Image (cartoon, rainbow, N blue to C red; front, side, top):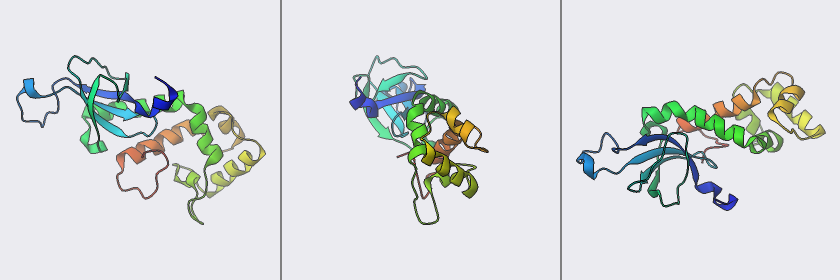
Amino acid sequence: MSDADSDAVAVVLDYLPHGRADDDRPQYQKPALAHALGVEDFRLLECVLAEGAEVGIGDRIDIRGDAVEEVRTVDHDDISGGARSELEYAVESIVDENERRFVDHYNEAQPITLRLHQLNLLPGIGKKLRNAILEERKRQPFESFEDLEERVAGLHDPKGVLVERIMEELRDDDLKYRSFVQ
């Protein structure tokens, strides 16, 4: 799979071999489903799987590939309990694997309004911490989460802060501002 297709990659959160429980059709008529999380845009997806497709929790799937017949975006409330319990692990994994992309959020975040900055949307980041991040990044862009933690006093677990914000954006449908979940 090329980088151009990275928006078509999702992490399987749950596999439902007998479809949704609320589907009243006989079991043999229900297609297998997977609840998944888009790697690029963090969309929650329900994928109807092709007959014979084998997927497991944590697998990466090409949602445009042969294993997936149909895809629809769903809300957090629409995914299975199993998918909800895997969600934070999947988000952490995506952030770990794409550290540069998420460190760059700290390097490139911009003001949203005169009084609100993108960095203030992150849990635990107020005016003082935001200003410390902005001052440090003027001197030199951050290279890693470790670099961020070392150079910005008071910013503990910058990766965890991002994971927490992404989870908030996934769970809360009526947030005014979003930085990660499309």
